[in-house]
Image (cartoon, rainbow, N blue to C red; front, side, top):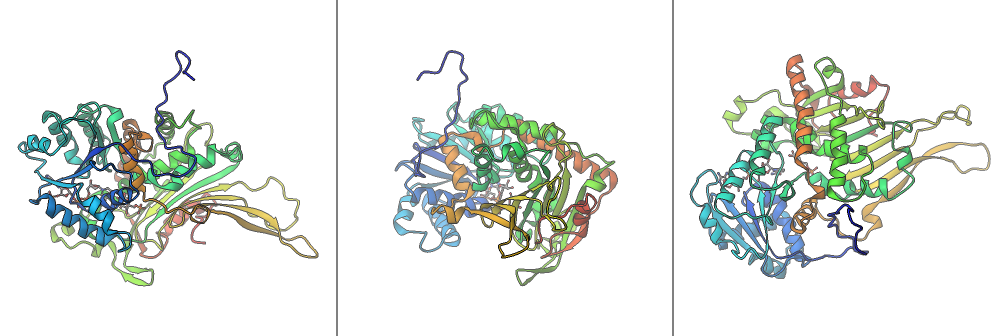
Length: 511
Ligand SMILES: NC(=O)C1=CN([C@@H]2O[C@H](COP(=O)(O)OP(=O)(O)OC[C@H]3O[C@@H](n4cnc5c(N)ncnc54)[C@H](OP(=O)(O)O)[C@@H]3O)[C@@H](O)[C@H]2O)C=CC1
Ligand SMILES: O=C1O[C@H](COP(=O)(O)O)[C@@H](O)[C@H](O)[C@H]1O
């Protein structure tokens, strides 16, 4: 049926087939700037290999890596093969799939900071522009503007091409705006895909399904019923070989500015009118704009910075932050960088006024765990006398297991008396669906190749998030807020427990 005159055009390009099916994408040239880096080796190439295994790529689709290294296509294919051997099991790296994948691989040597060499890159590409052309920038963000400009000058872009920007987009609001301006001179906003790989995780998308596919939760999803929300992203790994990057960055910029704020937006936003990417992003931006600024007056009470010391993780002794990294020059430049941060965030809007969102992320914590916990309020009046009633809790688990758990009060069975027990109602996704869970990068790469930007961040989201983060960093500087030590293998510094204790609340973990 034709849309009525004046109806809004929707751009949803989600695969909504009734069954999970591997729908092929149109032919593409995917250029990975930084195609020999750590991200390409560990994430992008294994993700692409998996999608090729499921026959989603046409025979003529190509992957072209760009880096300064002198290597021909065959040498690059060999490098990729070694990388895949490291990342995948022998069973996964099926020889027939590898043969198909290997012929897609090309390498082009180029110093992106140099003006020469860009015209030659065009010779590697299909000049009929008959296939989708995607530029994936897996390099330092300081190169994003230069790369976009050089691509335009070499005549390699048109209105159909897409550009993917890896996180972080900038180091603060000003640098993010500079990058967005430079890239925006060449590409329209609809052609720019800013990655936050948390948006590619299944449970994060399941937040949409849970909230808006059920009538049960939405009426309770507000300050009237929800006491507070906790978002935890705990890692057991340390900073290891990324010391140089991390030392300049810290947990607030590395994890909160992007992943944690995106999670917060997904659970706190108002219902979007549709799954259209701009409908969703319009709601997310409202949440970011409603975040209460953290000023020097309150920063001590609502944030905690931590840094790990040596300890034991998973039964193994591990070094402290100060012992990580081996470059002496970097070591001397060491700052009081936080590897842990906890924040009491408040959203100044009708729905959430008075319901805080406690955010917590850290490296070298007791175990890897990412979850969002909705702590509901207690019943207003108990008819069960002295029996304690545990308020309901909804837990959305992202990692390591993906699922949803709702705790309910039930009556313990028995011939006499009336005893109440809190029990979980569990929906474990891997048990419920007999499919292999794709890595977040697999989904995100496919969405780029399909031209669906819903799972990517719009310019205003990035910039709003930076404004809020910059304010915290300024307040830390103004008040000289230092890091507190926590032992590797713990759940963070004591002060993070005090943060909740002050409000008479507790972190959901440790159990
Ligand atoms: N690694 C990870 O897990 C994650 C990384 N990121 C982000 O992705 C980006 C890339 O990270 P990562 O892969 O770890 O970095 P690496 O340092 O491992 O790789 C950088 C890549 O860029 C190439 N490169 C660097 N400078 C130039 C240049 N002037 N001209 C041409 N090629 C160049 C390098 O090749 P060569 O030196 O041979 O030129 C290499 O291929 C960073 O912004 C990072 O923050 C984001 C999330 C996770
Ligand atoms: O972007 C980043 O994310 C990883 C954590 O990702 P996950 O999918 O393993 O939870 C983090 O280790 C890294 O420091 C950060 O840059």
